[in-house]
Amino acid sequence: MQPQEPKEPLPYEPRPEGPPRRLAAAGWQFWLGLAAGSAVSLVIWWWGWERFSSINAIIAAILVKAAAGSILAAVPRVRSIGAGVLVSIAVGALIFFSVCGSR
Image 1 (cartoon, rainbow, N blue to C red):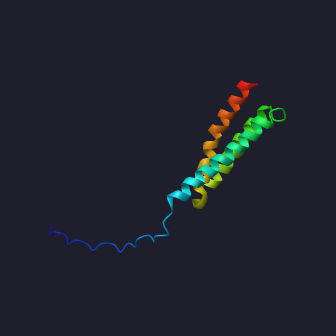
Image 2 (cartoon, one colour; image 1 turned 45 degrees about the vertical axis):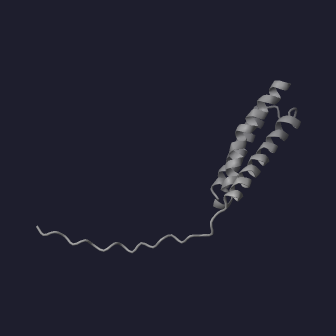
Image 3 (cartoon, rainbow, N blue to C red; image 1 turned 90 degrees about the vertical axis):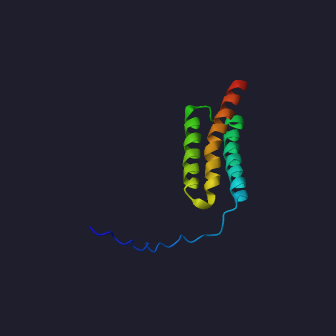
């Protein structure tokens, strides 16, 4: 059996580099999503307690935030906003339990 000659490498093209994404933009987008989602929870649980006191409001708030956060997280330019909205679900739970404790 004769030794095989090395094959020439495949002509892979490097991926085109887009403009670098600034990490600072991702940071403020995350905080924007977190603040917006937390504000929605604050409105629902603090000022709308009498109106939204059923289990349906809890489920609706979680589902709406999960859907909005997932959709935003799928879009590369606003992915950090989606992550902030998803994290705000936990913040909303903390707001809910603190309002329950104060009533």
